[in-house]
Image (cartoon, rainbow, N blue to C red; front, side, top):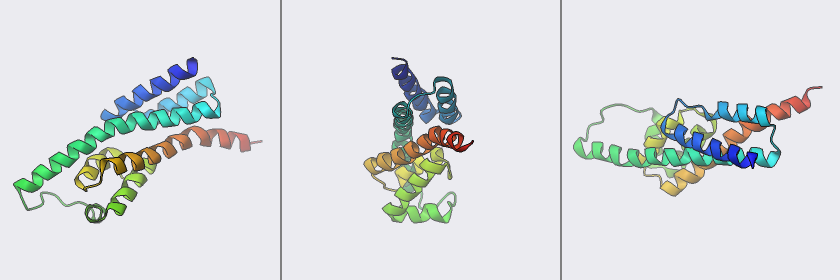
Length: 156
């Protein structure tokens, strides 16, 4: 029962973090894993719950970016600001856009809060954004939870 409450709490915190980028899901995961010392199955459930909660929030940014950037294109043909070259390439190629979303979700560079609305303007499908972003965030959160334990196991 305690594990279920922990996983649900992490999901709700990640949902909040999807809308408020200053909330640190990684810090909550580390503290909860250190305090409860969960099994591997609970650790993976925490990573999946955190990724799912965060992706629900970021989907709203994705859909908002899709409509906001298309509205700006209709108003003016001239670009108001210049984006880096990888962003410009991502608009033309869905694979580059998906790779950028995965890289951002897994590493945080470029920030996922910035990439989420931009991905909506790149004509990336919502299903692709969710799958690739979920995979990247799950890998990131699983790494945050598993790497300290693996390093501790290696230490004599």
